Image (cartoon, rainbow, N blue to C red; front, side, top):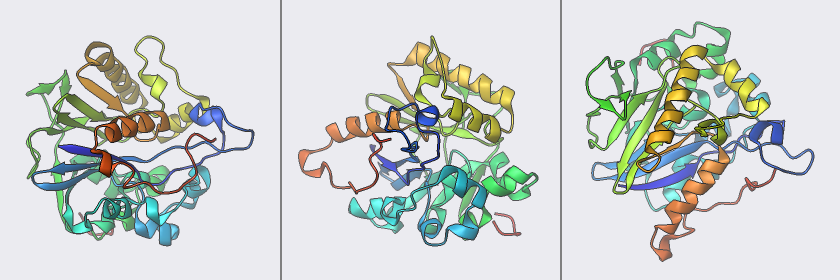
Length: 307
């Protein structure tokens, strides 16, 4: 499998270094990526998360919550959407046959409308919570307008026991997908939240979604988080005890299997830049730089019917 690392819209919340931990001039906002994966498989293209989509850019309200638009300040640039980056790589939207979601938050599922032919794989408890819209926060984080037109859903129950992946329960044999792609439940941020594991020739990638937000949280000896991202995680969590437990389990995975598994989250720019650089270094020389687009440099700084 060939993996492309895409940033599908940068979010620029206030707080600067107190948010993303990077040194910058006074007044320059933080930069949080929306790290998605485009995977070339024998079954066609696969996306891990979608980031923001075309309609989010063109009509941000009412698709996106004014609360989160003001808090996260996404740079809504059409050229940064997954579908536009995929087209610059020489593919078409219809080539995306599968989308595997870490969860259904607005900054992870906004591009579903752009790939109507794709089959969407997600944990069943995530769909249930997104549809229920039980709390004030749920009604702002889960935006039905982003996924109401998507007709092809495959929902997976939470695994109980059975075969494990590096000590984690997992969902294997995703419908229509190769066995090298797994759903790894990492509950806490939401109740159906999962990581996505992909096996490559030299080891595994684990896209941990929003199981954590800052790369130093995975330091197995002295984990730490910025004050801004610590507060944001506390705001967004559905079960703080499970979220922190799964963070500790991820640190243990890094501690014991760092040569076998590369763990990264959805919003840390440092992790994204390292992985993107490594992936580009492995590409044929003629393809390097093909999918670049200008944006603010990161170094500065559903409907009522069921799915």
